[in-house]
Length: 609
Image (cartoon, rainbow, N blue to C red; front, side, top):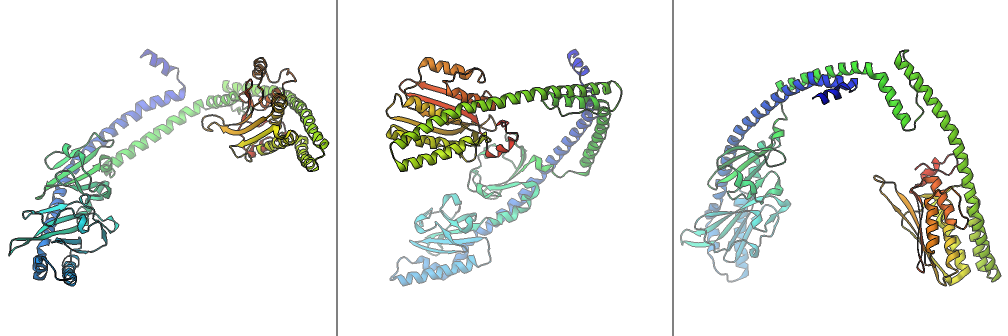
């Protein structure tokens, strides 16, 4: 307790006022509102839990009455002596007689059942002595003689059965939900079984009965048999499935609340009718309280008004006291992050005003010191950059002219023309010193031109390939970072290798949301490799200060130094080599799009990363 009091005592003024306001105003009113709302929602649950089962009982009775009428439909067949006589026949002398009888029976089924005024009947089917009679309102599939679920000679003992869509392959147009009433046709005079009759009944009569309950509080309503198979559901995809939770439902009609699901529900059930079908109603408890009464709305409105007024008053009082200190704190945070373009207005002559004046003087002094040091550093880096380029360019020119000279000596005019064209393009690229950053495509083209000249010179001794995994037209790179590496590889490789191969891979890595993305240039050759002592010395150079003293025999260091200077220590070169197996040099730079060239306004070759 003492520790908590000390923490409160050492807190800022704004924090103290807000905590005090919360303890005095917000918490008591919140508790009062919570208790009132809880009692209100509980009363709604009780009212709905008593009302819905009664409505379900009425709906269940209407469904049972409708089903009773549907169960009487097969009796209409006995009103036609002609149809009964057709069903009594066992054999036919010719096919025309069979077709005539089928037409007569189908016509009667159409006029009596389909067009007889009962709009819920989708189709009527009769299977009798290997004959199939049918009439339907809509087109259907999957209900032919060979696919019927039960045989024509089945003895139902005067009872009727209801078949669900999941038990047969019958499907109507637009997948309309239905139930199939199966009834045996008995010849009352001869006590003979004439066949089996199937009546497909559209489930929309159930929807018409319960549709008013569906729209209330966004409820789900379903009808299932006593085994839990869903006959009708407001969501058609559930029709035909089993309700696995039925075993947990109470055996009496009423309502109960679920607690095992993610969202609590109020479920009401009604069991009635000769089939003991179960009509269920489910609604989310949160939906029951969507419509609140005037008392609750008034309570919430008063609570919000009181809280807002008292909060605004407390904030105004605290802000008027702590505003100058708060502004000074924010400006100091900006200065900590390196933003010195800040100024704190002096609005008073008290202690805060004196502090603001001292703060502004300190920021101006720091800005002047940083500006002086930055100019000195910038000049040093500019001089270093040009010095590095001057070390690379003579080496490049010497090797290129030597290659062209050898081609001229061999008196190959076409080859000389090609090499001179390549050289011209390379020289234009080389002398454009204003461009410190170029597209990766330009750097690759420069390297490809160089390798092509060397390929012409040494013929079959050199093979090269360049693999581009990224779009090299869209990204940029510092100039002259590939050619020195390739030159170095060819220089040392051809001295020891008869068939020299070099491969260049351009890839990218990193996730822009997690880490900075990079471009990797991987130059791999099959040369003699670098001795272990030289490789160790080279790695020491790479890990040490890249701007320090460099041994001129290591051209790799120059490229590494430029990259470190431009982008930082997390980029640069990595060298792997094995004797008699070859060397692999990996150059890593930031992944930069061509639009970033506009950032380099002062021509110092650096792009913010």
